[in-house]
Length: 163
Image (tube, rainbow, N blue to C red; front, side):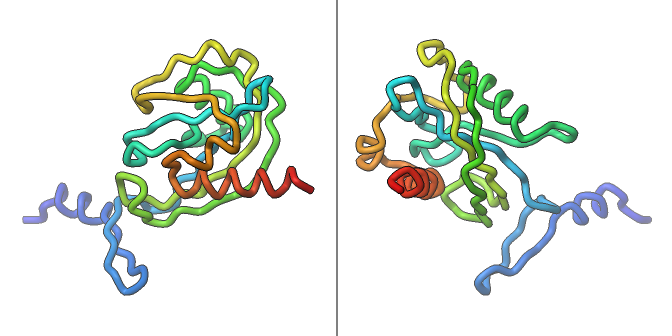
């Protein structure tokens, strides 16, 4: 007798080779996410501490829903995670994360990154995706335990704004 449940479960697991290692994931394609560097009126950057990133400091963000624009997804995700309202959203860059252990699960992400300004920087209410937050200068951010993709993003932003 054919075990249909087992076949369905097995077909969801995809095995991939990366650097000679067999990787197992339930993803069938990369997850596209949005995330902005958010600044307040004093030019300070919003960072939050996230268990999903091994309690490192990160920028907020999340997945784009089907039929949703990047801008709407950015506003929605930031509102859900921080209660912040955004304005002046500008595209910054694309970063890719393929099964990097810095995230708690084996995932392939394509991160669409932006800069934005917080309309209501004093209204922060974190959801369960973060345990703490800070508004910091870019100089202060250099001394923090920040996950590597956010570090790359900050470095790129600084480089683009020095010119």
